[in-house]
Length: 118
Length: 114
Image 1 (spheres, each protein chain N blue to C red):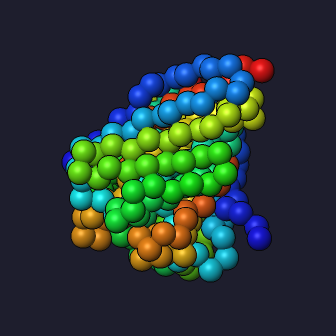
Image 2 (cartoon, rainbow over the protein chains, first blue to last red):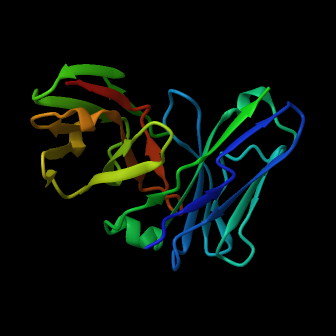
């Protein structure tokens, strides 16, 4: 079974530039998450999708971050303009659905997209 | 607001030692608690999931316990091996309506010396 795919793996940009990350979840997974993990910290949720609808984007800095999952499958996360404090790993994760997670089914993470803003 | 704390932040032990990692959370209204492993440069891998009605879960040399009333969980690793070296993260799933994403601790970085 293929895992959660993310690209690019690494990106270095200058502040005020833009960047986009792509995620392809496991086939059939209805729920997709984007997490931000700053070095030395645990992942923090940015946005949660159920199919192509947003469930939770309360911690997404909407003045500079945007995300979409138009067809309910793959997703893109965009940062424009980037700031130095956006340097982090952006993790995509997916699951069968939040109901199934509550019931004990696990969530699967991709290897992450590493962003350095200089 | 749910906060998750993990102690210690880092731990170094000799191979073969048994060890305990600690996790505490401030809001006991959770669906479940999960322990993950993160290797350098990699994503997270789920190790154990404990439902709020359960007290513990075991997988091989790993045993996780949950005391929801006191807001604590422990991950016990028996007979540690160098391959266990990684960062271990605990995460809880809140019981907020419509918001069931995981809240993570900052992790414990474990190094097992050969």
